[in-house]
Image (cartoon, rainbow, N blue to C red; front, side, top):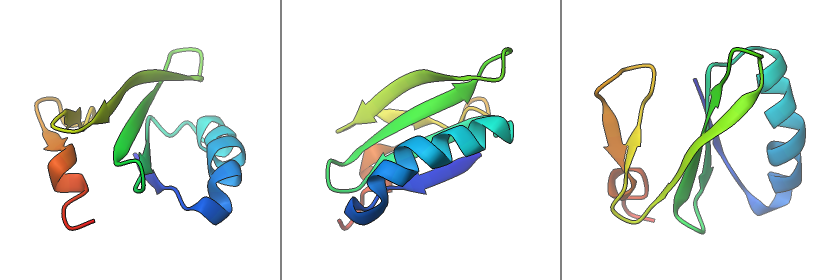
Length: 82
């Protein structure tokens, strides 16, 4: 699992180059955290070795940790004190 925290200066690289790099490396779960927008996109590697968007989370949503079946983090916890 990789958690990518976006910054304005590297956003294009993070969303394109790193996305493909992690996909090629078979990283099973990839979170993209947007701190200014306070949302999280969760991608899961499918059987073909490509990422599928599991869902997009914000506000009071619970973000699944995926690899730990019943475990979640709330967006409130992730963005606490931002």
